[in-house]
Amino acid sequence: FTDYLNIFQVGPAVSPITFAPTPITAGCPNKFSTTMVGTNYQWIFGTKATPDTVQGAALLTTPNIYFMAPGSYTIHLYITTACCGRVLDSMIVTVLPNGSNLTLTATPLTVCQGDSITFTASPAYLGYDFFVNNGSVQTGPGKIYTTKGLNPGDSVWAMGAINATCFSNPSPAIKPIIKPIPVVTLSAVPAANICAGQTITFTAAPAAGFTN
Image (cartoon, rainbow, N blue to C red; front, side, top):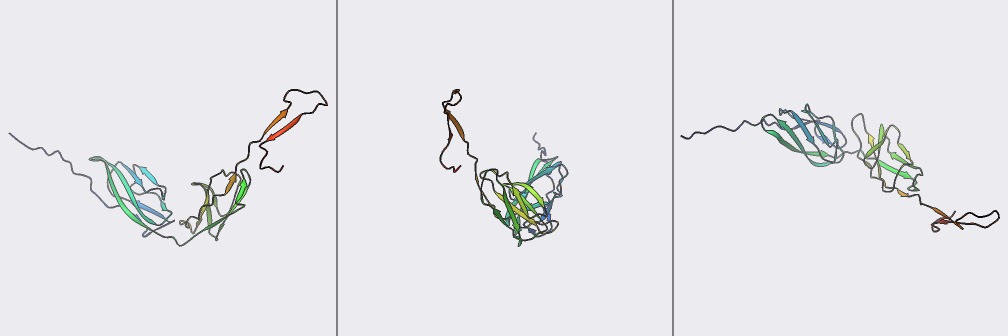
């Protein structure tokens, strides 16, 4: 006797990912949504987006997502379902260029480590966000950022707030020349104790590259 058992289970109803507003413009916020039923949602937008990943049990709709550069990007959505485990949905979006730019200048461009550098952003925007490498260090209406805390290799860049929600294109990054503080050693000849009136010679090293 031969019989067949139905061991298959109907998969989750697939629905396209949607987003608003449209079109997507670099520097402006967008929210992405799905109607697929699940117990956990993980949205992955890639390194050009802020934030690049969000997840949670109730994230059928994401918080505001910002793409900071134009181009085509693939969005991945992993959904944990009751019937089929972790399933993947994805879509490709096109991010349009933003017509608002920002320039940044640094004065001076070469300093010793620990000295002050002033960065000035232009043109005028409602506010500015300054970054050292990828970390925000100053947000507010001021277009000037002054710091003594840069290390060799650090880069500084900024964005301007066009309105309450959108930002300008990021400025080109500035990598100042930060000269490390040299280590100076001091030696004495003779190195042992001396009597009052005897001569002792102190020598600082290194000797090259210093004027005083």
